[in-house]
Length: 355
Image 1 (tube, helix red, strand yellow):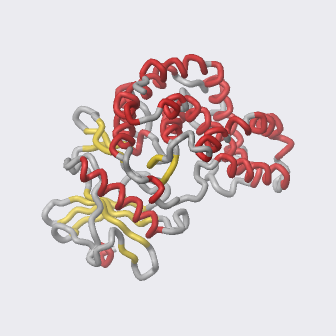
Image 2 (cartoon, helix red, strand yellow):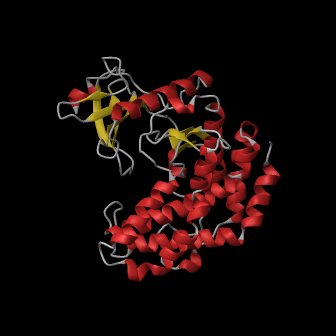
Image 3 (cartoon, helix red, strand yellow):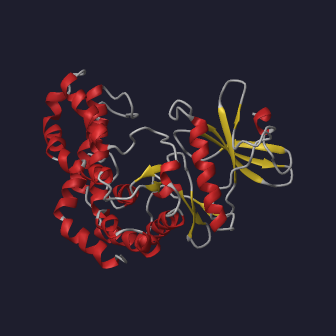
């Protein structure tokens, strides 16, 4: 670890390095130097991200672009350069490491504790979209291939159904039928992108509340973090994943489906904040597809959970034998509630639309 730290331009000598946060992909540490300067050190998971140099090119390009528009160091993640000038280093075991400036006076939340916190996350991701509206998204690398390519997700689902490798198909017939009934709809926005009806944007692709740093004193939005999945995509997907995660009244794997619903007050809170900040930079059709983004991201996660269940739980960690099936059922229940509230969802977006 010391050799890694010595590979970067740090302010002072590192005197403390402790595990930090609760991320599941990368290993994260808080580093403090003898002059009190703090940094975030991360070992990047090269098994999840096959091309780390490309990933770091994305992060470096996007963070530099953001920094040119906002000089406040608490509003943008700042990479610390390695001694060789690269935004990362590689150790003797072939592991990739990077260092960020620590965002002082900030906190991240694991769940929505108040509507205001959810509103501030919308402000943060809306600002992210606004500031990157003119960034050439097509120049970014795909850090995870076909991440939100729903037709490709369905191809994997069909293969899992046909193979029935674990003999679980029979016990999941209602869920399989639901996903098949929604396949055409779930692929709609990918077709719209291919037809040129929707613009390609720089998207974050993991727009959970815990990827926003809030000011510890007043909980106003500071900056967006965890840029590993920043790549070309659709703005509705970013909006939709926030809604799927933050406006669901139940946890992602809730077994009591009666607890699962879309909170329209939280949906409206997020829509208001998001469109207040970036609504003027979106096309009319982009704005109109925001509700579909919420439904699509929920469907996509359902098909991913169900595919993994049919394959024998090879991707997602589980705590019980039918964990992935429970997750699937929760997502399906949320989709069904969205369908019941569809007119109201669209009306809320129209009320805050600026295009």
